Image (cartoon, rainbow, N blue to C red; front, side, top):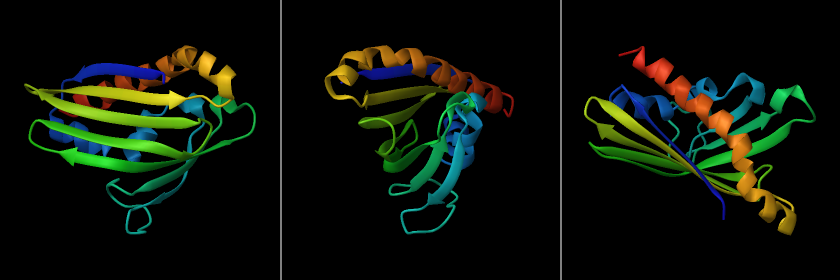
Length: 162
C-alpha cells in the first residue's frame, strides 16, 4: 500500500502544537483554500455537536471541491487514536466515507528542545481496482502541495504565536 510522509520542525512547544491540531479550527486553518473545504458537521464521541477537542470517536463530515471544479466530494473522517505524554503525542484518523478506498492519516508530534517535530504519514489506496493500485504511488504528486502548505502554515501560525 502506498504511503506518503512529511516531517517538519516547528519552533513552538509540543503543548501548543498539540492543542492546535486537536481542534477543528486547526484543520480549517491548515487546508489550502484551493481545496474548497467545507466542514459540514463535527460530532464528538458522545454525540456532542462541535466538541472543543477532536477525541477518539469524533467524526468530521466535510466536502471538498478542489479548484472549484466538478461536483463536491464528500469525506467523513473519524478519530481512531489519540495519545499524549510529556515528550510525544499522536492522533490517527481514518476515512469512513470518501474518494479513496482507504485513507489512514497519522499525525505525530515529538518534543525537540523548545520546538516540536511534526510528522504526517498517510497510508492510502486509490479507487479503481488494479488501475488505482498501479497509479497509487503517483498520488504523492497531488499530496505534496497540500502537505507542504499544511506544514508551512503550521510554522507561520504557531511560531509567530511564541
